[in-house]
Length: 309
Image (tube, rainbow, N blue to C red; front, side, top):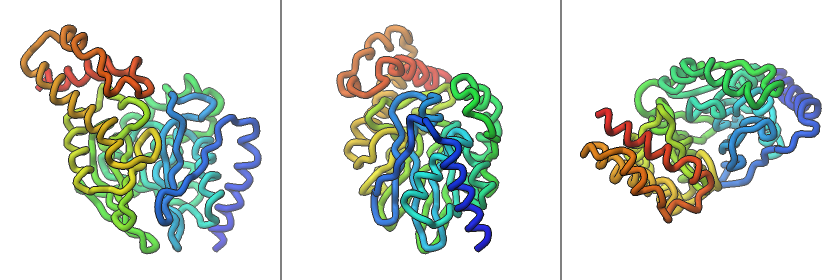
């Protein structure tokens, strides 16, 4: 009881002393019974959004809140905590990390200090530790003093195997690897509500980003497994909460293009520059935010993935 009271008091103090003048305050919206999503802005990480340019969410149970991902900094974590507190007085008991990119886990330390258990698949936590220094150095460039107090803390409770099931307060969660955007990425499936938090496997409203360590082949395979769940609602890594049809159009079809067209051309040893020029304009995806900045680089990295095989 004392621990819960301390947690709530500390969150209240943090929210009133650290956020004055901030331009972006995350807000939760209901998705299904006891399930809420926090949909971040579509643009890039910035000081204005404290690196919270992604989607988060939480499940409210009688035994406490399960938070999905923890933000890119201590200040970002405090903002997420405030968004939870606006919905429920229940303390945050668990934080589930779906991935290893900075905005998925660099707020872990804040929640752990306030009594939450931080949970992830084992490869997710290992990737967090591997990239921690690099990510902190990158965030300093645009968060500056707003990164103060952020301590990289990989998930301490790790789950072995390729899939794991957890239950808290009568709510069941299934974590499963996707290994698409980052090694060790995973989704969180809520079978009772038929809702999936996809992590960075799915993007809608903005174009999927393919990073040097991404795998479009894994992404296509994971998306097929996601479809097999037949979810009613998806909370994507970026973009609005959506249905499976939108996720298919804006992410699944793009994985199919990258694997089917770019991957085939790479295996057949066509010149990369000719392939990238041939597919430079794709009307089906041109409307997505960041298309102009990302599409050619995405094709380049997909080509390289298949070329190396």
